[in-house]
Image 1 (cartoon, helix red, strand yellow):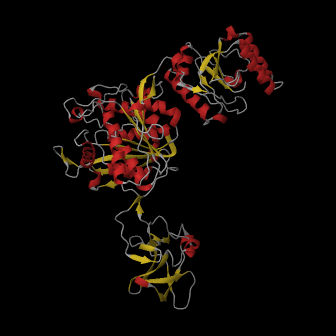
Image 2: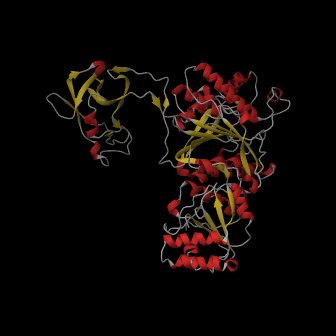
Image 3: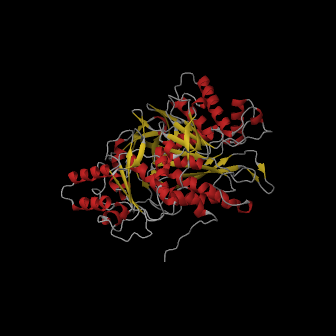
Length: 611
């Protein structure tokens, strides 16, 4: 019997459902608080991050290379004032888990296939966050955990003086994830040749798992020519034996006597003889084959012990920008520049949905100024009120968003002053989360000056739609029968059909057919696989169009609404020729309108283009 280990807490099911309920809000532009609105590619989104993450699914699903978050640590002194969180003080851990869980479910969908996420935390919720991340992202995609020297002088907690925090590191898919090494500014080279500096490293593989028994192709001899000595104790080598040459094989392990093998194949070695690999005299009568190591970078280390990662550095950096302490425990700039350098490329996008003082935005601008990159950021932050007795409030910053936006402005100015020749994007668009307008007022998208409309199709339009299908599928009795069922006996089938017009799409180019009861439809096998539909809800979208812009947007909206209303079965069609893509732009306003027309019962959806 298969056994499953699952992490459960009070309120988990309700928390998961939160991810699939409609946002119920929309983002509205705030140009007066933005910087370089017309030219920037950066965004500052102000509002509850759960709703914002839902809204980002439409525009940014699968587009964000890196996510960084520094959520509340649930220490008791921080706040869990989120509208969706569950649990009282006696259930503080449950409440925290229910707060973070739906946000991570949504965050995963935003990542590119090679994307990564970093999550700062301390030991109050480390274990719970690790378990949740293992579930959401997969334990196999846990790349590692950083130990950060956040308090070099230690904070006294009675029985222990704490110095560190954690940062969890996950990939969406570890087999596809892409990361970058960091510049090694302290790198020093012992040797020099025509190509530059280098250090040396033995060419043999010291891992006993790889040996001459299972890697015979990597076990072969080199020949060192003692009469061809080079500078610094190096010697020329080759793969051919010559008079007076010294034969060199990989050594054996000291502990187990395992025969090591080379790290390079014979073919690769031949291409780099006396260029990147050479002979070296270790001591009198002992020689080795070594590789010249020229790299000036290194993989980010799991132990981040340098004092540049200390929390007090972050506090000092923000204070230097504002002239006073306006934010408690901001993350140090060095931590975010290193994580961004490792986790994203020069043209990638990073999201921080607990952005606080906007250290992530500062880091992105600084990196771009230094290396000419064009990284972009999306900051998300709730407008949490500052303490009226605190310095931030007294300095005129009534909420955290005011601090974050002002920091970006000041950081951009500071970077321009330090790097006057640098060209980087120091602007950002501000969008604020507000209650969504009623559907009849929500159609704001325009095309050629006309607004989007949606309405119920007339019988004449329905007739035109089916006639178009008959022309495209001549002799197909199914279409003839469907016309008879849905138009000739509309009341009996309770069929509702909406024709969606996007600023003037011709009749028939964008239709959505909905039927609450499909048992009597002759074409039922294409809609319901011939199975009884009682209490079964089916969302039908052709797999051939999965991932395309309009269809995927439509599918995500339908999925969220369906799950939010207890629809438990979602089915993807398999016959690519049965249904064609729908060329519409769908937004939450239409979905609200659609479901406001719907009654309790069965739900079958059919989508078509040029029907």
